[in-house]
Image (cartoon, rainbow, N blue to C red; front, side):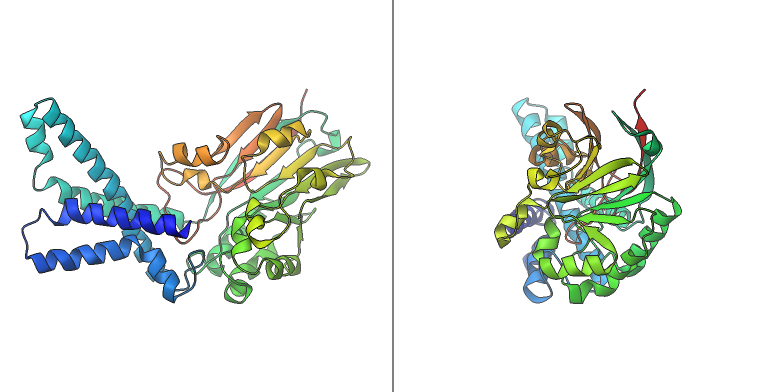
Length: 378
């Protein structure tokens, strides 16, 4: 994955330099210097990881992360814009439309696209760093016990506490979550980026999450990139119940809900237990509706076949940028954002509260804290 991201960044940087900088009237040495800087920004993740932290957790100041991310996102947007312009230029030549070809070759068009890409990128990074807003939905569940009609489950996912989304940001997310007064809080993975030592202060505000039935968490892929076992202990020290292919019950008198959680497939790289829904549901009360916490949504049909009533997932970040959802959903079983009905089961995929610091842009895909109210079917 590191090699793929670096190669894509390198190709985008070279392409933008070729199509934006080299046609400009300036000294060749200046073109070379600017091109090298542009390519460096495009592959900044690899450069930062080589000297300061890792690809998953760049350990440089917040302002530096935001600035570099603005630049690399602008390169991505500009590469896409250049592709569109070049495709239009090729088509106009094939169709012998000289006026269109002349307009697309205009000396100001590409520089203007560069300025626009930088402005849009800056906006996207600001949105990625924003404190998430609340999204409220209702989910009807067959055979939901009357005692749980109106039960409020708050879902947090993809918090990605880091040098970019620091403890102060996490504290605001926690305050917003507590203000909704949920009955139960669930966190569906990717809580942190970095080691326990690096992120201890940034993760500490999560201990202040409050709900009568507590806080239940599962792992995402990013927990495995830095000291998985240490983070499991740290999360439990922050008053979370962590489910690793296991379940627990929430009770209201004689009525019960089963909350089950599975691990993440990236566990295979580290010799740790793979997600196992059968193990997660082993011994569960068959009369109690099941809410499954699975960081990735792609196995929703398997969960539905096991009788799960509601699956809560994240991982996709909603696609982050309008249009990217069409790519992201291909790797996630066709699921990317919002509510889906899957073979009689409801799947909800949250856009997430935060973002990975390596690509923290949101354009048209807002972050969220999700409050889910359970309802009995009539």
